[in-house]
Amino acid sequence: MKKIIALTSAAILTLVLGIFFFTGALGGEAYERPLCVTAFALEAHDLEIPLSLTGIVYSAQSNEVHSTLHFPVDAVNVRVGDRVSEGDVLAVLDMSTMEMEARRLQAGLSAAQAAANQNLTAARNALETAQRNVEAGYDPALMTARFGVSSAQLAVESADAQVTTAGQALNNARQDLRDYRSEMRFRGDDFDRYDDFDPVLSQLRGAVIAAEGALRGARSGLELAEENLRIAEESYAAAQILSGDLLSAHEDMVSAAQVSTNFNDMQIAIQQLHEELEKAEILSPVSGTVTAVLAEEGALGIGLLFVIQDADNLIVKTNIRELDIAFVTLGDRVEIRADATGNAVFAGSLTRIAPTSIQMAHGTGQHSAYAEFESEVAVPLGSGLRIGMNARLSIATRQRTDVLAVPAHAITTNAQGERMIFIAASGDDGHIAEAITVTTGMQTQQLVEVAADELTVGALVIADAAGLRDGMLVAPQEQG
Image (tube, rainbow, N blue to C red; front, side, top):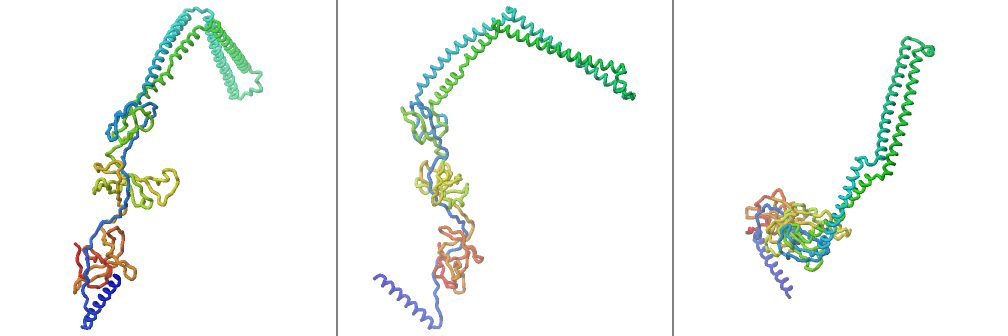
């Protein structure tokens, strides 16, 4: 029934308008009333397309406090929410059994060191006594053998000198022979023919032969002296064995006593126990706020015991899809909002974008419809945000500054498919709708960038282009 009434009303309105214009036409003139339109002055705008994300507030610096000791917790000194400074004692472990073991080992080490020192003192005294006996000559066989070695060494040195002298004499004799032969060549004598008849040449040759024999004799003497030295040294070694070599024996006793005073292994074990005992106090590695306490009195204090975070230095962790990653860069300004802080908007900055997607970073090798990259946004100090809060983020991914822009409903399309807008141009009879073909650019939720040579700032743009045609009379009403 309502549909029929609506059609009837439209038909009556059409009939009335037809009679009105028909009557005007019969009067000999066409009459067109201006169309009331809303208009606004064209302005330049800064446009941006924001990327909306959600994230969770974290501390920029989070430290986990662990223990590797299998000892019960004796006391827990902090609660969640407490602020601590670096070095504060968070908990104390009951390590009394290790303290007793350290004291037992220390007592054993002291007793062993005292006994070893006594043995070393006795061995040194015995060595000094043996050294005095040797110096006093209380072992004739050993002294005789040592004297034999010294004599043999002198004989070797003498024989070696004789070899050197014989070698020099042979070199001199050979040089004299060469010099005489050179002199004969200079005189032109055929010494090869008269070799056997030249007495000087025969004498020089005899001197060389005699020198060679002397050198062989000296070398033989040296070999004999060296053999005598070897025999003397063996005799001395035998004398040391026969006499029991008391001095060496005492020296060995001193060396053994010194070795027995080495308790490095036990000392290292005690040092390690003391280092472990120092870990009985679980200390805070940083200054911050305690956000988790897992240590319990009486329970074993091993594993994760505390979490300490910087509650003032915050970040928001979020994920950026691969479709949007190309439009953001480190350092981009980020608007941060949270339900807990009402309408407040905080200016953060994009500080980290993971180099790999979340799936690949976890090593799964799986791909979702859109890969996501874990990212971080720095939160300004004093924001009022707290760790664990949900946050809404907005990043201006694309921007255009100082461009002409209009609402989307101010743009229409002509028969050729060109985009155009209408401006209310002043004419003789009032304002006329003038169509201007435009090129569109960036589009946000509210505005569309437009460009045309005819457009200038301040031009009166008709807000709604629907139903307008070029040259139509309009009565613009400017928006406030």
